[in-house]
Length: 251
Image 1 (cartoon, rainbow, N blue to C red):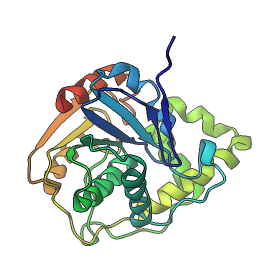
Image 2: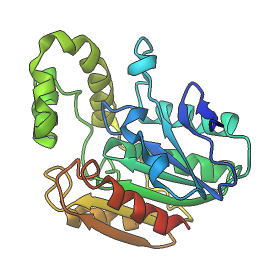
Image 3: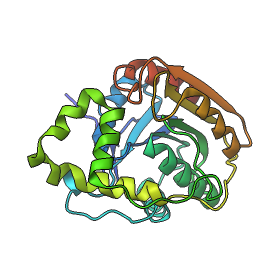
């Protein structure tokens, strides 16, 4: 019995897909980890290799302090992709919630580097980045505000936050991510020269379906939108449906 070799670097996790024609790089939500995309590689056709990003401050990177700004985070991830993924396989990026903003910023950097062929940006559960004149930067939210927000977005998983003994593990990454998002306001929108696909849940309290249309402002190659049944974390119960849809956009 042969075992498909895994991909494990400081920033990237995944399973090799020999003969793949395109690589899908996935970016987790605030407080999320690379494990959010566990199992995606078993649902995709063999022509797609799935990698996910492991942010600092969680799971095996728990002791590490994360970047303070979106620019620092996106710079580090883009550098890791350029250094650790050395082949010329075309690359598509998928991000959910906060991961949408990170994926957009990494896509911008990779496009400017001209090292990889960027095929598509796929965003989920978040509207496009807001400029300072559209939404002023805010102070980092308090723990109480963070927990109220995540309970609203993920009522099924809210019980996890009712155990204070888990907070030393849970809260550092949430504080870092929500603080980063509060200050993130790009000075301008960079229009990517690749198509953008925006996905969302039809009952998402954080990103109503109509807000997905704003992603048309960051592409010169067109936007398509797909709305799934569900709330902010629609992608968990609709995982197979979502992965099938993504594959249809990449192959």
